[in-house]
Image (cartoon, rainbow, N blue to C red; front, side, top):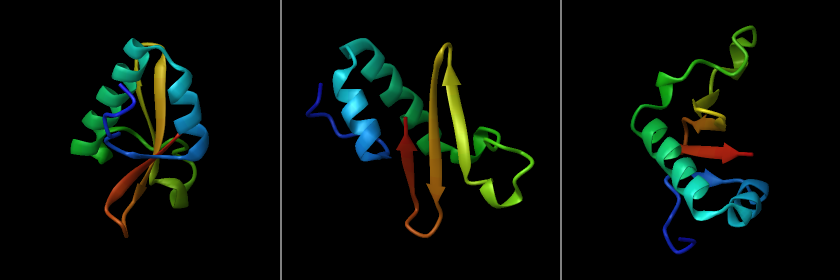
Length: 81
């Protein structure tokens, strides 16, 4: 499973945490990030009171939450644990 590229760039901490996960949760995280990669604006901002933080967003499926940052300049997602 670790040979499959991630649909978003993971922070070093997120990458190390993901390597410790069993295969099923890894697949769930990949699916969540793949989904938000298609429409990153579909999730609400992480903190709606912070107008400068609108690019930091959480995406959840059940108890699993992936917090990601939309890097507008590079046109990519960046995920953190």
